[in-house]
Length: 113
Image (cartoon, rainbow, N blue to C red; front, side, top):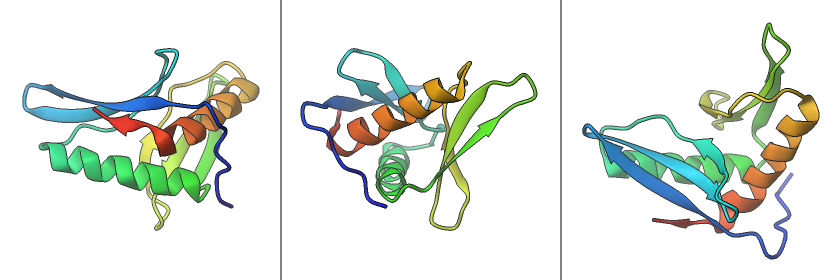
């Protein structure tokens, strides 16, 4: 199922380098961090991850889970079903689903900086 983008949503993929490792954060227009990629040894690796995340979110390749403490999180999955990244944890499933919806809307239009 493809993502329906809501108008007015914008944000950015912020690429950061620390100690020779690169990661990207999907930042909403209000400054909230929606997703954080794993670390990569070069900028091209993290840019490739961003594209994979965008594609997986657009195709609804996600799964929602809860941990032993009852916190909820979602995983963005590759086409082979492997975890590309995992979200932060949320107190309720509703909060997790709301964050996932925001990530889907922001990821597609967000510019890479």
